[in-house]
Structures are given as C-alpha cells and as structure tokens.
Length: 184
Image 1 (cartoon, helix red, strand yellow):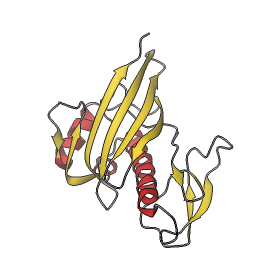
Image 2: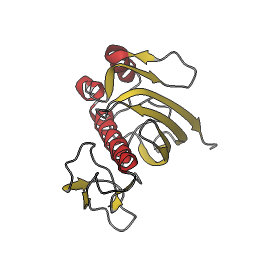
Image 3: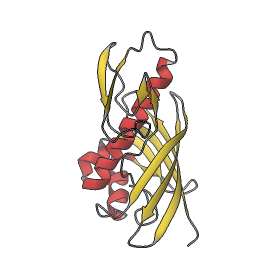
Image 4: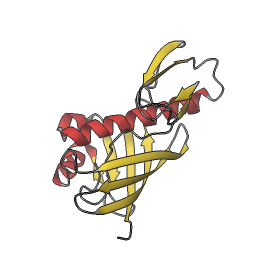
C-alpha cells in the first residue's frame, strides 16, 4: 500500500528470506518440527512454494529466523491488503496503536482508523504495479526492506525503503517508508 500512485505496494512475492533449510516466508510460532509451506522466491530455481522443517529449539539464530519468517508473512499479508483494499485486511496488518508514516518526517497515521482511512485515500487498483523486495536487515526488533515498484502503465518506477517494527503477534507497531522515483 503506502503512497498509492507514488511507488509502494507489494506484488509478486519476490522475497528473499533465509530460513531453516531454505528460502521463502512463513509464520512465527511454528511448533518445533512442523512443516512450513512457504510461498515466494526460493533461490530462483522454481516458482513453486518450498517446504522445509523448522525447529526453533535446535536452529542456531532461531529468533532471527522467526523474525525473517514473520517479515515475509507480513509482506505477503500486505500484498493481500493491497489487492483487496479491504479495511479488515488492512487492520490485520497493524496493532491498534500502530503508526504509519508515508515519508520519514510526515505526521504518522496513528491507530487502525487513521491507517485504514489513509490507505484507502491513496489506494492503487489491483494490477497497477509490480513489486520486488529483499531484506537489507532483519532482527527480532526491526526489519529494513529494499524494493522496486514499477507502474508500467504510468511509465514510472520507484525505489523503496521500508522500516517495519513488528509486535510479537506479527502485526506492525510502526511502519515508515521512503520512495524515490527513478529517472525516466
């Protein structure tokens, strides 16, 4: 979502996230040894989802792996909200007191009502853009995502930087985006 028409959205699930034994996305809170079916980019080998076993107790850096899975899951849910523009899908991304900044120094939208209203006021229509992303850094506290959003019908492409702070339940408590239009 973000600043619709100015370069932010999620498309194509083009995520690189290292996980336990593979690449892709998933959900936080998997039971040890549970199979994790993950959509998204899996090393360029195939477009098919990957499946691996994730055991938090025996995986080095399990907290970081869980954070990587949580971020990929959040971005996939963001994509769903972008496609539907449904208030419930948007609300599900954020904690009730979350802040959303469309630019680093802008006044944030605060709470579900402001975030939903801001999102809807700037929405893109489904299919308006394509989006590819990869993490620059993911810790249990914060994720920094670099992306490119292309609006082919408008002839505009943007570079994006997102800073996402996720609550333990996988919803964002704070989201800030930067977007810069590429020269024509």
